[in-house]
Image (cartoon, rainbow, N blue to C red):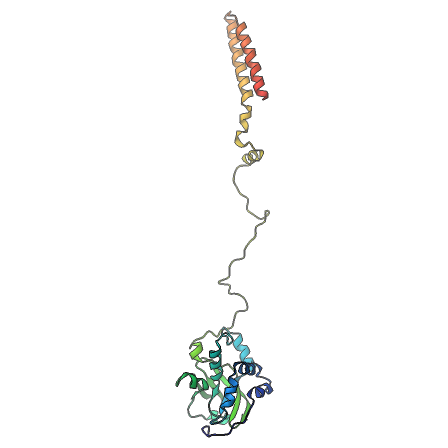
Length: 265
């Protein structure tokens, strides 16, 4: 039975996983975390049963929103311990297990009733339910009393760390289009909309530097023409009335001469 006390094997768990050729990720995690030494120390007594996810299982997990690498070291160690039962259960014992709810090494650290696995037989295979995912035993990697190592199809995620309903959907291959910002359009002079600031004639006057006041430059000449016509009319009227217009004619000549000088300025 699983409760019997047996001598340790001095088994190198990491080496056994590497020899299995399908557990390189698990071997690396166990070695880096340091918990593998704790597993090997627990080989005595009731023995241990390890459920080790395959490399494909870790690959599937990396494609979801869950990341083991982002966990603190103590939480990561708890996840690894969650894959180990502190008893020796060969495959036959698992298939006929009486109590499906089994404590793990993480249970011993975190308290009774937590970090447990539910083991049952589903469609002819041994199924292991973590409360979040259900994995199946795919192979026996090593089995020598008091240690047995099974390969499992999924990484066992404890609900105490990841919650009861974690997001296990596949990461999108591209950014979320619903939150994506519209592309920034760089307008060139050729593609920019035309500014309708003023009429063409006004723009030309602004470019010339004088704008709407340009017509004022014609005022002196208009004044001369108007004054000349007016005085000529007066002079003709005076002659018709037999009045002497010598003085008025002289004044007319002076006015016209002065106006012409003004026009030249």
